[in-house]
Length: 93
Image 1: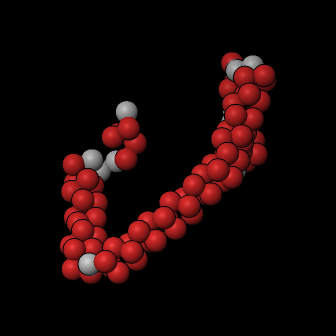
Image 2 (image 1 turned 90 degrees about the horizontal axis):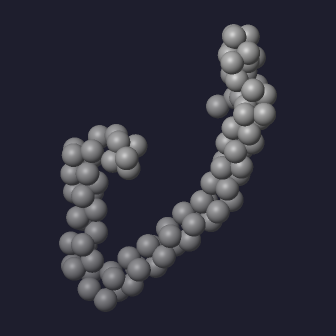
């Protein structure tokens, strides 16, 4: 989201009702959360993906039929989850 365009298009009444410090605090908090997501979240995602791939390869090495059976359950679980909870944000609250 482009914050500069968003703040430029707001009505002056919005700025009269909200204090500048509160707006700057929200903006700073949003930028910090985005920075944290990109730094630690991306690293965690890549690490988890590597671990998943390593375990999957090892499972295929040990017993490929059982590994295939187990890995085929993931798409089924994904679609069942999407059916019962179409919006991810609703499931979290």
